[in-house]
Length: 463
Ligand code: XIL
Image 1 (cartoon, rainbow, N blue to C red):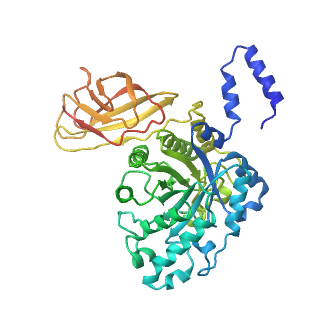
Image 2: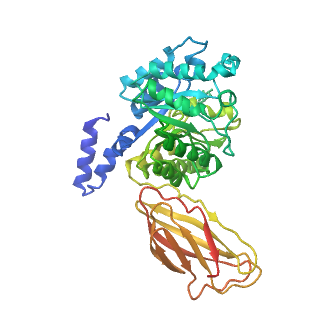
Image 3: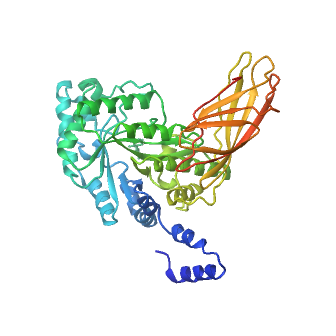
C-alpha cells in the first residue's frame, strides 16, 4: 500500500481547488495490475521460473503486482518425470506454494508437448506410448489436484497450415492422443479447467481454424475441454487485427479463452518510438480480452526483460515485456494498467493500423483506414480513397464492417449510412471525381467501448 497520509493531503488540496475529478485517478493509479483485472472479473498474471526466485526485488514485484502465476518450465515433462515412472515435483511445488502464500491462482503448464520432454519418451514402443502418456498425465495432474485453476493439457499440436504436428505422440498414438490426454486430465483433477494451448492462433487463420474445428469436434463428442490458450508471443506492430473477433468465436463455441504467454518482441535496441508502439500493442491485446466475457485473463511470459526467453531464442530481438531489465516500468506497463483500470488518460500515440484493399482495373479504387486520435469512448478516424484504376472516376463508395460495436456519430467529406456494424460511405458532391492515381479523404468521429480494432478489410468501388 502507498502511504495514506500524503495521499490524503494531496486529495484534500485538490478538492480545495475544486479538482474532485483527480480523486479516482489517484486511487486507481495505486492499484496493481492484478487488482484492476480482478475488478473486471479477470486475472492478470506472470510466468516465473525457479532460478529467478532468489532475486528478492524480482520476487517482490512478482508477489504484489499479479494475481496469477504460471511456472514457465518446472511442470513440464522433463522436470516432472525425468526418468520413466519417477516423478519429481519439488520445483513446481515451490512455485505453487509461493503463489498460494501471495493469494495468486496458478495455471498448470504443460502436460503433453513435443518439446522439453525427456529422451526416454522417444524410446517407448509405439503401442505403449498411449499408456505412458496417460500415466504421466494422471500422476502430474493428480499431484496438483485442486491447486490449479487451469491445465494446458496439450501444447502446440498444430502446424501453421493447420495440419497436426508430427510429434512423437502424433506419430505413435495418432490423432486421438489429444482427446485421450484431456480425458486423463479430467479424471485426475476434476476441478482444473482443461485448456488446449498454442501460438499463432491469436488471429483468424489456418492454424486457429484447425484449433477451432478441433474444439467444435470435442464439444460435439463430449471430450472434456474447457478453454483455449492463445500464447500471444507477438511481434511489435503486429497484433492481429482479428484478435477480438477470434477470441469471440472460440467463446461462442462454449469454451473460455486465456491469453497465456503474452510478450511483444522488438528488434533491439529499444527506443522511445518502439516503446510507444509496444504500449499500443499491449493495450490492444488487453482491450480485446476485456471486450469478451469469456476471455478470463492474461499472463505475460514473465514480466521483466531481465528474465525473458526471447533474446535466447530470437537473436537480436527482445525488450518484449512491460518491465525493463532493471525492473522499471515501461510504457507498456502504463498501457496495460490504464486499459485494465478503464482509465484512458493519457492515450499515448494513437493506434495506427491502416487497412488497405487495393484493386486494379477500370473504376478500381483502394481505401486506407487510419485512427487519427482516440480517447475514452471515442475516436477520430480518416479514410483515404485512391483511384487505382486506369480511367477517371466520378463517384466512389467505401464499405467496411466494425468488429467491436463502434458507431459513427459524425462524418465529413462524404455521406454515411451505418446499419449495425456495416458502414457505407459515398463521396460528397465535391469530391467524387478522381483522376487515375488521385486520392481524397473523409473523416469521422465514432464511439467505441471495450476495444477499437481497425476493420479487417475495406472495399472500395464506384457504387
Ligand atoms: C519457454 C521457457 O520460457 C524457456 O525458459 C525454455 O527454455 C523454453 O520454453 N511456448 C511455450 C512455453 O508453451 O513453454 C515456452 O517456454 C515458450 C513457448
